[in-house]
Image 1 (spheres, rainbow, N blue to C red):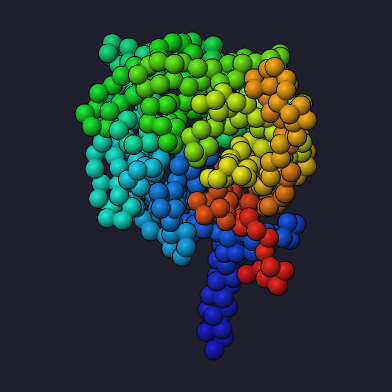
Image 2: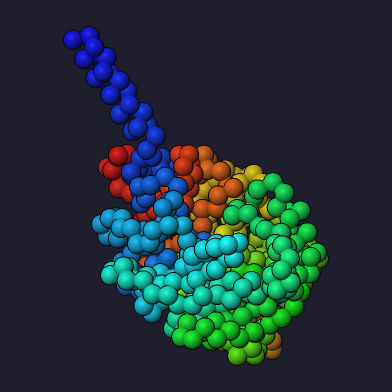
Length: 428
């Protein structure tokens, strides 16, 4: 009996330990009153980068990465289904087909081959899109899924052709706050490494060069609605680069989105709104002092700047599909503009400043329309380590904000309900 009691006690302790290791499935944040749910089961799961579309066109499923591949979460039932086995590089969920596009790299006899694939989330049928040429990357897919876009690294290509060991560029980490990132950014910009911005046909693999130079081209993303519009950035320390640009897929209409107006002004982490009409970005005038989320209309060239407090600044922002709400993922103590007000997921309600001129100024249409953000805290991330960026996105039904977090240790995917929870609900 004693032996049986010991065994049962050990099993009980093990079960308790396992329960303690697993983050709660659902709870009400005591500091904000909002309901938070854990969407992922497998530790090490993560949502996508903030401007990568993770949602199917019908709004029903969300793609996440896991240590063993890619999975889809049914947002109505929260059922998780494995879609792709093995570690891959996710591009986006196609806005037309709903297939998930990704890259897989295979090394054979010291030769690396990267192939772009697309997998249907319902049937699991996978099709090969294209084998990428050497030294070529593909990071995004256009709205009608006819083109990929990325870069060709001319230095790497020359090394490969000459049979030399490849010279890789300085690499950025996965987060914005790791030690040494500032030095890495300076060194990478100083390389003046020759690059090309390219498109690749998904039908026949044809590569077309849109831009060639020694700037560090990065953050490449297609418009969600216009298959001919590509956005990219001149990467580097933000105070040293004119960052955000667009170009057409025929190589025309190279456009700088934000002209600098003062020394040490910075802008970046740009993204398209869901309708493709607005480009939004983090703007600081100057760095770490005055904070805005700025918008540029690609058709009318209209500009809107929403002001926010330093304590509400976030590493990344996002906008709801209907354009009426914004969200931010907060910041940590090593962020460019450490908020100093704890660590939070934020909801922002934008309000335009009333124009009392009634449009009578002769240049009123060319002036910036100012506004302000009214902030609401949604999730307390006091225990989150910002070497992992939460990367907020709105669900298509406008009811939840999805983010990733390590606040319980391992990385998981969570969602917070935009509406406040019922006071009668309790932690589960």
